Image (cartoon, rainbow, N blue to C red; front, side, top):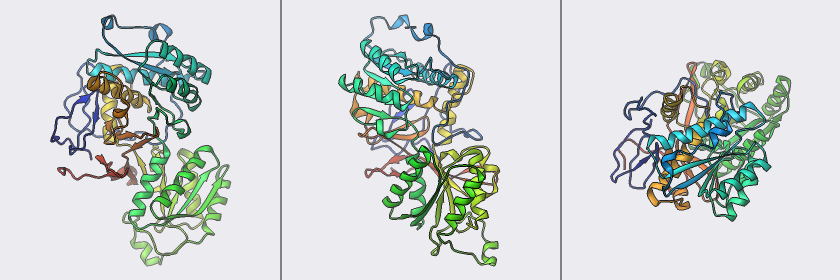
Length: 454
């Protein structure tokens, strides 16, 4: 669990986002809700079942912005030497879900500014319409209005359309896409890439001695992305993906994939030993073609897939079932086949603080992605306070930041690295198996820091 530890040098909180300095032992995210309705920096329990991991489809939560709302400029900003931040989002997107998500992201960004009473940063909301052409027009409008930085867009096609314009104008972009192909050259992805979740799980199991990995993935772009990340992570930590199966339908296709996977060869347990095991103290077995199996699915698909492996005699006492953030779903804890399975996700306690502040300010819970708007606006505020403008060296600070969902840093190639917790399903609920790290190490691997350690 993250703890508030006094740093050895002053640390300046900006809109709830903390810059992590090399000399500090750690810090907690402090949020003061709009209207001062929350009290103090004490750690509060996370919500019962927050959704973490790969971004879900945008949820319709009832927040949409009118054109009049987007054009509003606070009168007190007249004559101030401003840092201008273009906010490119699909306010008039074709679907209600996109419009709703855009509203939540903008509100969260406004909350970040309001909490610290910022007077030299102004948001310039521009409507992308949810299309590449609309995003390009929105970027042109933001640049014409003097934007020093761009927040958004939300979709990969929109980011591609914006990136060339932003690079020509030397304006950094903090976008919310998970498609790493659009990152780089001043375009950063502040999102929840499944590659980070996969790497966290693989590194943990490899540290326990696992070196043979398997995966059963859906025949979808997401499944392909996770499979590629899984192979890369296994190789990085000295292992190999020894078996890989794909399914493209319902339970029949899953069952066939599970049976094909079982034919790769798995170990067996003596009855007496099996009865004495619970799955909580798992260690990789010496025998069998694989010791860990990745199931990158969620919801009903996951609840059909996991039992299919059991029916194929793949024993979770021997083979550890692992997954991505899609596991963080209320349905997962009700599936016995997933008991003691592992997956990675952001720090739930840190997220709970933001949700309280947002709900106090706007009277409703934020969308899952709203925290990205908050963190990106907070980053702009931090730079404006420290340098009076936008500074890419701060954006790429290797020490990273503590934001709504915990520790993160933006790499020079535009991708994001997150300090994720490892969760397990136990006793019908999600429990933290290994806490999120408190700082990053120089080699790019997040490091755990014991409380009080400097």
